[in-house]
Amino acid sequence: MVESKRRPLSRRRVLEAAVKFADREGLDALSMRKLGAQLGVEAMSLYNHVPNKDALLDGMVEVLLGELEVPSEDAGWEERIKEAYRGFRRLARRHPNIFPLLVVRPPDTMDGVWLVEEFMKTMRGAGFDPAISLYAFRTFSGYAMGYAMAEIRGFAMEPGGGRDGAATLPAEQFPHISGLGDTLDEVDRDAEFEFGLDLILAGLREKL
Amino acid sequence: MVESKRRPLSRRRVLEAAVKFADREGLDALSMRKLGAQLGVEAMSLYNHVPNKDALLDGMVEVLLGELEVPSEDAGWEERIKEAYRGFRRLARRHPNIFPLLVVRPPDTMDGVWLVEEFMKTMRGAGFDPAISLYAFRTFSGYAMGYAMAEIRGFAMEPGGGRDGAATLPAEQFPHISGLGDTLDEVDRDAEFEFGLDLILAGLREKL
DNA sequence: ATACCTACACTTACACCGTACATTTACAAT
DNA sequence: ATTGTAAATGTACGGTGTAAGTGTAGGTAT
Image (cartoon, rainbow over all chains, first blue to last red):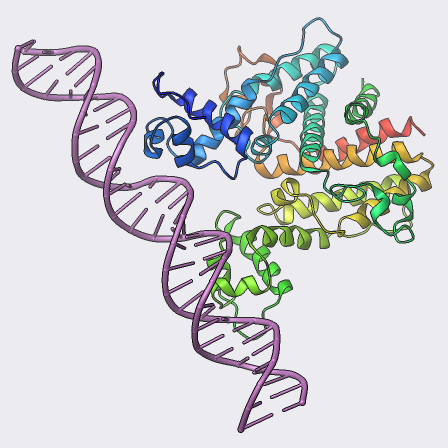
């Protein structure tokens, strides 16, 4: 599982190896020594390409953001926005172990900025004024971030706790949750996420 | 700064001291040894009340959730929902260092369940059917979680990066962001958060 | 060719971490 | 006063991030 020594080390290679490692083993398991081993190198060698572990984590966020796709130009504004956030959610599902990093440490590079630019362009093009556009961006982003996070980690404050449906908790104490019946077990996450996007979009449309 | 030895140690006391410590010094600085010192006790003593550090962190989440208030019964359903999520955001602002824990580790106790029950009761009372109520819960929760998190950590993907406004980035490369002018510096976070809640509520109203 | 410089991998060492395990202390019940 | 038990302590181990110093291989200037 250790990479052969072929290519020379580089910041890029270190970051990508870190992402790969965390994808496989989890964030907690990621240590400089183990990452070094994975690259066929001693821990301290990494410091020639990354100033410290914190910067390594930041770099991993950078890598993730780089995976985001820009939605096609020729769709309508609503579809463009939805597609952008679907991509965000896909990213979370592709890297469930690492995604929390992105939530917890905002990128300190400009890699994320073009995403905002793209969003603003779409919104302005649709006829919204700047302030509304900005608010809308944060609403959508907050929603997508929170939903994706919840989906990955098992829905904090979810009816029925982490794993199972509403069956386990006392019906008389939580009548309205129990009233959900098996709605809980049949949730279609895609539809659910889409529902949220549509909800926000519907609200937005009224502001046009 | 160390607490006097007066009261006997207990799970509760340990958890609350941990919250206090992390509020003051940050999550990274929280170690069993330092927490012990803060309580005037050796590190290993803590293990008589908490099985390990992971459980300690879970317990801290539990404490945070316990701080949430249930909104007044006699307000309308929209106001009740808004008030509940305002409380959630207040919690985040009161414990900015610890709040990320709540996002990253869903509570494994039933402490959060009554929140859901309360939400469902309000929704059903307003006339929504169970499935919509559940979806709405997750939309609101995702939004509130994401927004609060972004607010605390400095708005990932925020126009202008972490600290300053749009002034720092090249206008010709990001015309639509620069077009925001100083809208960025004058954001009223309360109004912004409220805007998102209203957006979702507006969408929801159409489903009634 | 020789000398030098620079970049980068390696080695060692240190302080701190979570916690297993064994021991001592303190206190309640008999 | 004695015993039982729960809680606090002491010691130790393997792992962590990283500061500091030691090679060493490759390119440049002479």
